[in-house]
Structure formats: C-alpha cells, structure tokens
Image (cartoon, rainbow, N blue to C red; front, side, top):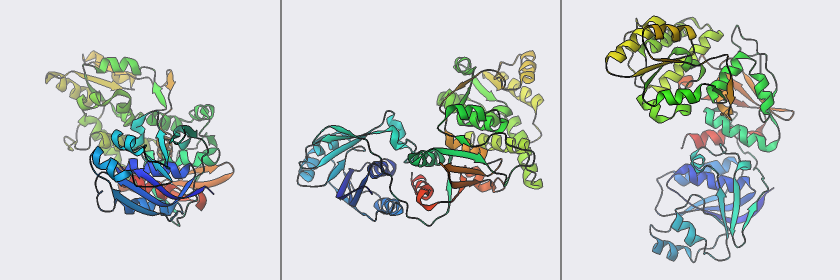
Length: 439
C-alpha cells in the first residue's frame, strides 16, 4: 500500500528526466505523497509540471504537482528554503549548494538516491533498476531504505511503443514482481525461421548463453552488446590511427553497438562505404516491393537500419556500386585520398582479397571465442521481434506481447517496438513511453 505522506519535495534540475527519476524513485520505494513540490532555481518551461502530473496519474496517485521557485544563488536559497516544511525532500538532482542548504531544514527527512554510475541517471526511469540504486536518508538519521513497494498502474492504454532502452526499463520494473521470462510465439514468424530457444529467464545468464545456440538469438545478443568479439581489444589498438570502414556483415551482426564498443572517437573518424549502403538499400527496396520475410532479408533490414542510424546524412550516390569487389575498390580510393582506411569485416574471404590489394583489413570471426558482457536486454527483445512475436511472462503470467511489425517501415526506422499489455497491473509501458517522449 505504501506510506501516505502529505508532501514530497524534489530539488528540480533543468532536465525533466532527472527530476522525474527522483520523484519516481521515491514512489517505487513506497512513498505515496498527496502533494509533490518541485523546488527550483527558476521557473521551468511550460508543460513541465503537467507532464510530471500525467506520469503520477498513470500510477494511480492523483498527487498535486506544485512548482516553487526559490532563487538562483545560495543567499536566495537559504532565505527561501528555511521556512518551508515538507515530510520528505529528495536532493538527488540538485546542485551541490542547493542540497547542502536544504539539508539544514529542520523537521524534514532528507533523502538522496546513490547511483554507482551517475551518467545512468540521465536515462529513462527504470533503465537502472530500483534494486540497483541505494536510497539514503541523510537526516535526521543516516541510513539506507531497503523496501521496494511499486505503485499500482492506472491506465487503460493497451498498446505502447518503446525504444530498446525503454524495453530495458520495462524489464527492470517487471523484475520487481518476480522472475521475468521471454519466449517466441508462432504468430508473425518469418517464413524460414523455427526458433530453437524457449522460455528464457532473463535474469539467468546460463539460460541466455544456452539460447545463443539459436542463430537469431545469437545475432540479437551480438547486436545488444552481450556477446563481444574476442578480437575487440586488438581492433581498438588498430583503430587508434585508422579510418575504419565496415563491411555489410558488421552492420548486420553488431549494428550501432560496434561504436559503443569502440568509442565516439572511432565513430567520428570512420568512413561509410557507399558500396555497403547500396547493397543494403537494394535488399530493402526488394523487400518493400515483394513483402518477402525470410531470415536473410530481415538480417539485411537490421543492417540497413543500423547503417542509417550511424550515418543518417549519407546521400544515396552511385547505386551501381555494391558487393565485395566495389568494397575493395572504394577502400583503395580512400587510400589514394591520403586517408588510412582499415576495412573491418566478418568475411574471411574478403579479408584475404583486401590483403592482396594492399588494403589494410581486420577480420572478426563469427565462429571463434566470444567474451560475454551484460549487454542491453531491451536490444535483444527489440531485435528478436523482427523475426516473430515475443511474449513476456512474470512467473506464470503472460503480461506482454511484443508484436512483429517489420512491415511498418516508419516505425522500424524510428527504432521502436510495439507492445500489447495483457495484465493491467503490470502495464508500465505507457508510463515509460511518456517519459521517453519527453527526454
């Protein structure tokens, strides 16, 4: 039921995400405030508190949201805060001086949510599981609040659209209620795919590893950053003074994750190959015309989406250039133009031919050793839903269906997955969608 209090105050930052995360952390740890105050240096943009109010209404709270502008200097803050009285003040999103002065307020419980990686506090609520943060009381007595008490959901919205990060947030919130399982459904399945994985407990690393025996699950695990190439450290060294160019199979198997592994410096110095772009584009054009959904086409579809996300401003030039021969020709032209191209591929044959043409190349093996990392489970789910509908279960209850809608090109490019809620009390997807759309 939670602890009903009259007032919760949060020291509001300039960002909607950090202010909202602080409020929701308190609510998921059991507070049920009648009023939520946002204490600010200055007035937020129009609609700021209304969006927070809407998110609280989705959690069946009905709390009033009130913004109080205190001031923009330590002197103003001390003068403005000393006579205020609240049951709880969360100082997590505040500037240091705001938090220190606020901590002096008498007869008020001061709290702070401690994240091991502060950068993750800028992600959608739930991306960091409430289980993984430490909610501290700083005064009147130092201590850690341990009991998590998720609020009830109050929304009739059954269909939502979430990004892979939003899916990650949803999975973390669902895990507060028990073990979370995923399994493939026979509906909306691509014509030549018969999954050999089933009923995977997403909290069990061994079950996830076992599921990677399925080639599609393995592909999605690679794209999520869960399976890392054994050659990654060598590639990082080679990338230090090179302009990386990626073959088609890198975009298919690793997608945007390749740059998350190698870093922004490598991304900005990399060079897109028109031959790769055109090869992927030709598959997409044929797919849109024929409507044929087979594994190979969907693989290329994923690669094309990743290419366009990484290089969104690439013009469609030279459509006649596609395939391995043109990849080598294009790499040679880059070398002539005083660049230092390093062709990265998973095709050992292409790697050998590039060497014969005196093109620097680097091969990542698809059958060698792999290093396992945490990865983003939301990316796995989003990827798997390109091949069939996916069900999400908590303990013995089916709570969501992720619908394969790879025919909807606009939504695919937008990178969102379509979810249908099965049980209302677990339907946090509309809340996460609202938060994502206001980041």
